[in-house]
Amino acid sequence: MKAVGVFPGSRKIKLVRQARPTITTPTEVKLRMLEVGICGTDREICAFDYGTPPAGSDHMVIGHESLGEVVAVGADVSRLQPGDLVVTMVRRPCPHDHCIPCRAGRQDFCDTGDFRELGIKEANGFMTEYVVEDERFMYLVPRQYRDVMVLVEPLTIAEKALSQLWQVQQRLPWACPVTPGQAPGLCHRAVVLGAGPVGLLGAMVLRASGFETYVYSREPVNSPKGRIVEAIGATYVSGATETIEQLAKQVGNIDVVYEAAGASAICFELMKYLGVNGIFVFTGVPGRKAPVQVDTDLIMRHLVLKNQVVFGTVNAGAEAYEAAIRDLSQFMDLWPDAVRSLITGRYPIEAYPELLLGTPNGIKNVLALDGNV
Image (cartoon, rainbow, N blue to C red; front, side, top):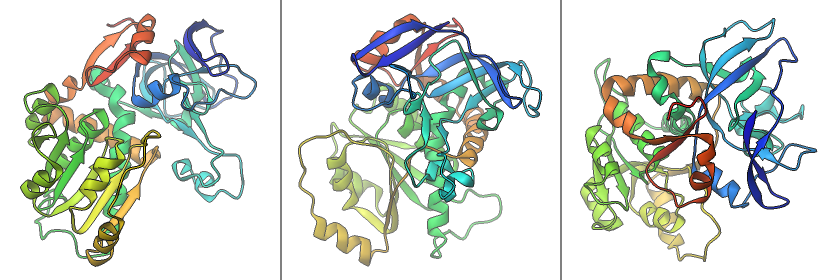
């Protein structure tokens, strides 16, 4: 079968042929891969910034945003059957007994760093025709929304962030006096920094949770990204015409910043305007660039005097996958055209060089391994 392999030793990316996997344990499931999303992580791995092949292999099959169809199941598989559509969790637990998060099934909080990540670290990913994985890492998705379910994995980033946000804000009387049935974010204001797939999906989560939501990005207001933001009832503010200071004046007290840009200078500039009792969530991992000047005294004063919290979040656990599937279905009921617009194009596996090595274009590009381009 075909697969896209990254060879760190020779610094090459190639379309390779390898044997189809087979089920070897009773709880394994065989998938025919339908779609694999392309993201910045994939491009960074293909630039050899990071990425580690499985032990004993000279290459790693890339791809971690997946949608697959079950074609066979092991004898002890109970939740899935042939024909089901699933997304598969990316991270696998480390082997250490003393790692409490991994032993509790929360390998997204692994404290040893010896976890594996499919398509990223020491494990093959999904950019291939067939995959075999354990049932416990798979999540059933509704077939009626098959055309957007490849977005589940990037959506889990926002879901995990929002879950932690609610937990953190339990420390104070932050919730608004709302009547039953109203969204919990009502009367709070959120800023999303960046309008890539992670940022736009984060904006949808925040809007669905009741937040007055603003998205700040470089593209003009009448760009496709700007139109998606407006379609979901959020406000798009263009960095081409408005400064961070002007953004802050427009928003007022900023209760939440959801960072999805990976640009540290603009993040710390915005942090100066985080509001009282506010939370700043980092999801991006910036590359190594020249140092930036930061007013650390001002930021520290605000953190203390305004009771602010800053945290980072990466990867996701079972709870976030289940929430992403549920919420993506809700988004399709609320804003079907906007959600579908996130996927800019579908391409055959042979198009991998331009998607992984070329200049990024559009919002979310997808390799359609099932041929539906």
